[in-house]
Length: 78
Image: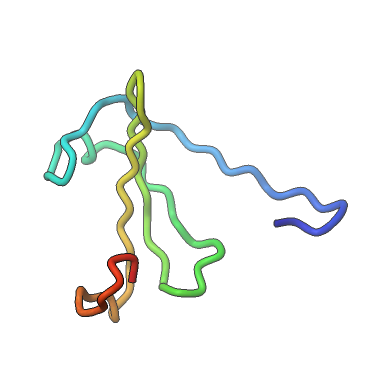
């Protein structure tokens, strides 16, 4: 959310085209441009995201950097 009269800076990037395999390593991600994830992230230390659109969907792969991340929490989003 921006303050009244302020305008948020637009961020743009290029994206490769393709349909990656879901929940599997896929060579399509190897050449997808990495975009830093470094805004509005109070819960963790940042990361990168990569995007691949096809004719019907937009696929996003997110890599999070946080030394405290693990699978011990009962909530899957944490």
